[in-house]
Length: 281
Length: 81
Image (cartoon, rainbow over all chains, first blue to last red):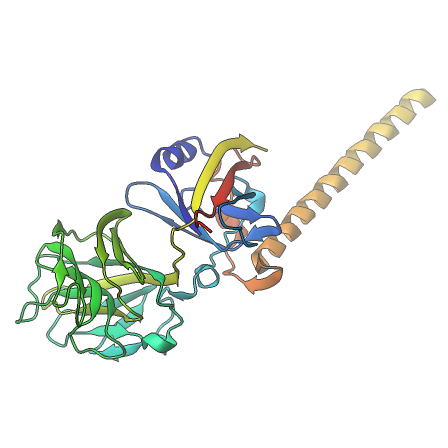
């Protein structure tokens, strides 16, 4: 499950010296001890926390056996365990691209990031859907930034794609469920071979910046939900199927950097997580 | 110097030595605890490798020092049978 510690709470804890600025002291405990957790700050000052449940929760019931902990030096260091928490994770922390990816052009890995270089080679990476371990009902998140969002795209109209597309190739064709870049803009594209959105459903067009943004796409048999920096921007009916992860740039004058990619099975409706009041030990 | 005063000095010296030994012991235990935390994370009862961050990185940033703060996390399964 994933939840957020809201911005006012995080700001207050930081100001009071209760929480480390790098959030390395933020830990999750469950009924059988500490849980591996993934923690990442969000643009507005909130803190996103994800962990795996220690035990099943029956339909319509709650489990209050978990806690969030922070502030103790004795609990150092953090347990950076994204690969444990998520079924699919790549933080691009090595010196070369993991073999799970199919490659187009000349993407590079370094400094904990993937770079899709500007130019005319249309660089990209994609998975083979059937083998990537991401189920048909899944939540995909990509943290990435466009260094110059005013860059032109490749002649023909494409700028960059972040999301799901086809299966195991770089042909720009249906079906797809992606965040679709434009010049200084970002929108969502949901396209099927037939039926609803047989060509493409596109909406809304939002302003883009050079900051890192988190692009999230939830997909299941009912449709897709697009979340941009923690705000839901579109819910589109119509199944996406088990498409491949696609990260691709057509920008001629700007690199695109990707910090991480992660995915997990999507349970719908998602479990609701409630945070209790803070107490000091 | 009376025997009583001498005995008192010995007792104070002994207590001081014990405090020093205890402090060293606590420090060692803390260090060992940190090392243990460094070594692995726990997931479902099995050890999972985790990045090894120097303990020194963690110190001096939290003015509340040794205090730990907790918040209960309640997870609700909203699915309907």
